[in-house]
Length: 439
Image (cartoon, rainbow, N blue to C red; front, side, top):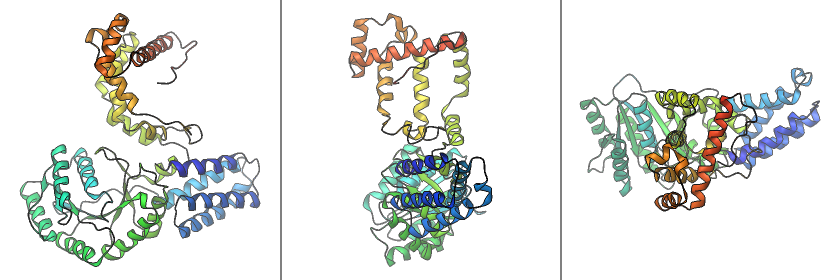
């Protein structure tokens, strides 16, 4: 997410931090570089121009020029202005006073509305709500079935009917929600390959018939400036309340996210980075600005860890570590919790100091965790508890069972051995401790 933008900005900011003294000239030069980076990232040119003007105005103040660390002060100003550009603070979903609370999804075909409907339903259920998904896309043949499949996989109800009146389907869906004590209705509407009057009229009819508490414009972030243009058109017709950016895991340059808030004045509510139903994040402007500028995002990292880590198991593991009883069963459990936190590449961007330059060229292969898990699962309980008994013939059997090679099995066992040695060293004061590399 924003890797290309982050990499380029990181170089400019590194140069700024290295300046012992700032003048109007080198501030202007740095701002020209920042503007170039923003435009290359597909940020709207008016937004980029205004952003640079705001930063320059504050950076040329006496507070910065007389500062002991002027470069760091300018970086702080850029961070503050980027946070402001993105919306300053989180804008939580509103559900209104009536039940069910209605959330209407709108956007072009292919923007990811239906998948987002499933992700949002899952997210809201985790927050304690009882959602219903309503299939009001009457044009795309697979849309209704796709929503039903998502509903079955999540055990979340879906309302659908054979009708050519999308507004009527939505109204009937709300009646179904009330009768079944479902407090939230997510309406998936039809999209088009481009904006047209018929589509806008239909979405407007659904809006009038359902009185939604939230109208979310779902934008494909990979379309760049087209997403901003489309958002402006939807705003004029629907006056939506928030924006959702999808496909943030692709090769999007990030410009849509930085532009869409400034152009429409509407907050970004969620970002979606992947096809998996758990890959949805509430949008936090300050945290995203921090990640774009290579400062990490500790808060989001901790939140992900809290969701993934079983506290009861963590307490048991701590006791095992103190007694030096850590085995491959525990190792497997830790890998599974790590997988639940999300893609490793994304987790790295949340670690302070793990900036673009430090990890440039490094491709984290999440499939490596799958291979390690397959190898450990191919072992017997006895082998997991006592890896020392795994001889040559056992290694061949484990390799066959996991679909890997003996070398892969050896690598996993060696890395596990290094981890155990590290833990023993830590227990005895940490002298000569070296972390295993390459895992």
